[in-house]
Length: 358
Image 1 (spheres, helix red, strand yellow):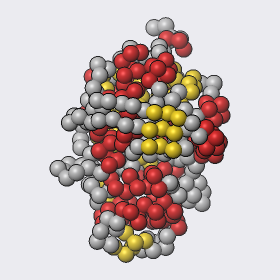
Image 2: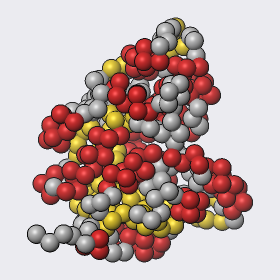
Image 3: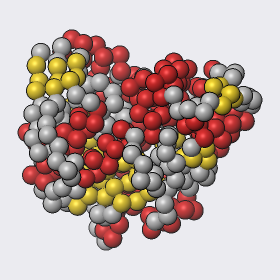
Image 4: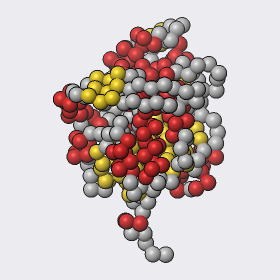
C-alpha cells in the first residue's frame, strides 16, 4: 500500500486547542491527522511551539461567519470549549448562556462547512434525579445543542482530568502542599472518578478512527472511584505529607471557592463551578469504549509522577506562557459581550442575540 501523503490525511479542527486538553490532544493527533487549531488569542497563534506542525487559525467563536470560514475544508471537529474564563473586559450573561451560544455557533458552522463528525468532551453525569450543578447542567445543554443538527456527534464524558499542566490536578496538589490542616465541607465526601490525559487522548483517537464508535455517549473513568477526601489523602502520601481534616456538615460553596482558589492557585470563576459539581457522586458507567481502554488506563500514582517536578510542584499549564499577554489584550480591546435569548423546554436556543461593543 502506498504511503499516505500529508495532504491526504484527514483535517481535524480543534476548538479549544490551546488549553490543557487541547495541547495534549494536538500532540497525540500529529502524524495521523492534520490539525487546524482554532483560537481567539493572537499570542497563542504566534507563540505556539508547534506552529510548524499545526495550522493555527485566529477565530472568535462568537462570530458564526468566522467559525464557518475556519471550519472550511475540515473533515471532523473536536469541541473542547467552556466559558468559565473571561474572554472580554465585560460579559453580560452567565457562563451557561455563553457556553450554549458558542456551541450553537460551532455546530451550525460545522453543518454548513460539511463536517462529517464532531467529538465533544463533556463531564460525568450523576445517577440521580436531583438538580444538576450549573456546570454539569451547562455541559448537558451543550451536548443537546451539538446534537440538534445533522452532523454526527460523539460525546465523551470525563470527570477530573489529570496530567502535566492540568488545572484540576494542580489545584489538588497545591491544596495539599499549602494547607497543613484542611476544613473539608460535605463535597469532600462525594465520590468522583478521575482519568489521565493520556487515556482521554486515546479515547478521542479511537472515536475518530473507528466508525462504529461514532455518534454515541461514553463515560471515561480511568482511576479508581474515590471521595475527594480520599484523593487528597492519596496525594498527600505521594508528596510525603500527612493530610489533616476538620469535617464540616454543609457544602459551603460560597466560601469554599475562595479558599480553594487562593490555596489551589486557580481563579474563583473556575473553582466555583468545579466545587459545585462535587455535590454529586460522579462515577463512570461501563461502556464499549471503556472496555477498549481498560488495559491502557494510567494509574493515579503514575498520573501524579508525570504531573509534578522533582520537588512535587505542579508542571505549568500550557496557557501560562501567554496568559499575561491575553489579559492585556482583553483589557485594551475594551470589548463588551452581552448574551440574551429565550430558552425552550428542550434547552435549545430559540433566539440568540450576542451584542458586541467597545
